Length: 315
Image (cartoon, rainbow, N blue to C red; front, side):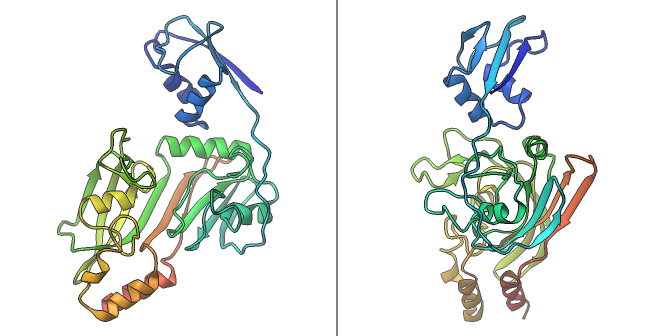
């Protein structure tokens, strides 16, 4: 059990207890902090308090954080394309169809299983089923992904993601022709009110989400765009593009699948159907190295199946 104690200072007074502790422990999410509070592992002046408690000077706050769970996902000899690796981090070019971590219905054959086989020394902070994982790409999204090999690296990278200081650029092919050269989509994202496996901008408990886009190429019924994430919400790019009526081509959940029947050219319809996934690729990832404090940036080229669609559009 890791323990810490804080004395509320004048500049901290008035904050919610859960927010104060989230800022003090950037490697933990706010929901994780709230869970610790509910479990009685946080005390204010030696008494239990609610997450919504407004802290006051000079209250004493004690927090106890359990040790990370032992890693239980099993190593599997799944091939990986390693872009970079040292004793702290490993950067991967993730292929399509590879789930990042075990979950219901996918307890084997994931990136975590592959990393456990390849690395041997993966950070355990992510818990039994998510060791080393500090961010995700959807199963059908390809591109650059970083994992932590040490606890220090995990904490550093988690803090960078929380501060939105990680550089992330994506390439997407979307339905429709976008008129402007660039733009910003700013709309809160949360759980869909009726479809709980989906995210939506129409939600009761949305979180701030900002996506910047730049047009790279225009085609008859499509636009190729570069996207930069200012925040990192679940399905953010797919939800935001769908919200402006330009869903990602091939997106089975947020409208891309429904638009395929309206594609004029039979040849284009055929290559999109053959792609069988959303045309979304994480092309650039930049971060401050946890040990050297130097900025590092990695690029992954557009994968062949995505490139085939683009070549067909150019013909």
